[in-house]
Amino acid sequence: MSGLGIFLVIDNNMSTWGTELLVFIFAGIVIGLHSFASKIKFCIKRYVEWSYVNLNALVVVYLATINI
Image 1 (tube, rainbow, N blue to C red):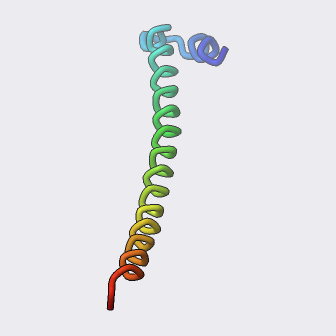
Image 2: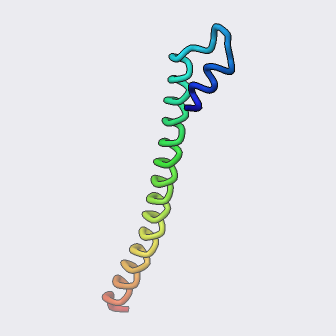
Image 3: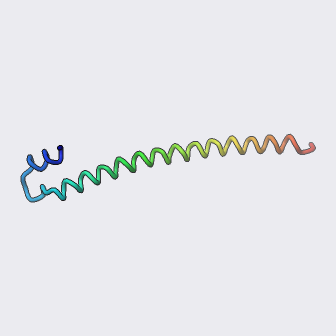
């Protein structure tokens, strides 16, 4: 509906259905990538945090098993 409204309000050579469709497709891609990027960022953050935890656990196990 908003595409139809923009098409009817702006009456010039740039106002075509193709242009409107491209704008909405571009907006959808930007919104989708933003959502995907935030999920990837969260996954990388959790991976790094758990890497530190696992590294510390390995150091503790190593220190517990060596003969000092």
